[in-house]
Length: 260
Ligand code: CO8
Image 1: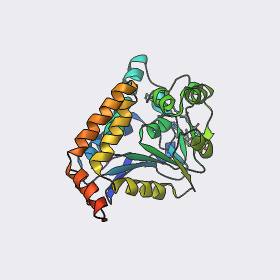
Image 2 (image 1 turned 90 degrees about the horizontal axis):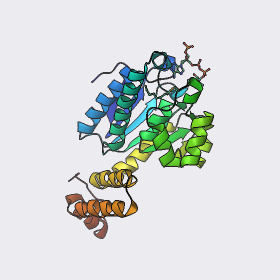
Image 3 (image 1 turned 120 degrees about the vertical axis):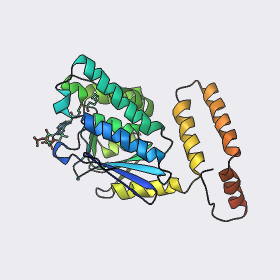
């Protein structure tokens, strides 16, 4: 499907989604969030897609936040509705069962940082800047930033980034666990592809259930999370790919996984 604000292509089992509104540093208007939802539905349905990479067009920005032209017009009612809609799209990304990597090629601010937070992993260019500057605009994060940032990096970091609104560089983002890897500018998509290929080499159902155990388990008391882990572990023991993976190891050959 062709989109107005996104470029989507599938190559070598990886769907690459590029936010393509360079004149506004790839800011997220509502139309872009609608397109992202549709694009994620397509990627979820497509068995040829094993991983996703999200990035921004140009070399300046990943996504510089929600589109402030639209934000400026919001009433209380549609502010809440747009926030809930966008949260739903990012939750879809987070729970679709396929790993996603944010290739942060520049500014990841506000909704852009929140988009990256909803991905499974984040790789940043050395020159990237990340931040939650919403309070400077008299608003607050509305695409899950207060929740995911605190869960990923702890409440101290979340308080600091959200209430100071200060941007941080890629190395600092790495130090606090906000990104997984920092690479040279221009190498961020290639690095994301390399990471995606490593994931794709593993058993798809094992990857999917591991992500589910981490995502859902974090919302549970540890006892319940451990039970969820054991249940999903048991489910994987019944898969063809478990037989294949263990046999391949014992027979000293490469495994051929079938997603079954
Ligand atoms: N929205 C709309 N336009 C934008 C945005 C944005 N978020 N960011 C940049 N632009 C536009 C600029 O207005 C400018 O347009 P023009 O060329 O017509 O003047 C163009 O992009 C280039 O930007 P700058 O000239 O400002 O470039 P600089 O290099 O000087 O600065 C910055 C780059 C620092 C990234 C700067 O553009 C900036 O601060 N941008 C805004 C960042 C921001 O505040 N983002 C958070 C927005 S709020 C949010 O994301 C809330 C999410 C939850 C929403 C939930 C309900 C919808």
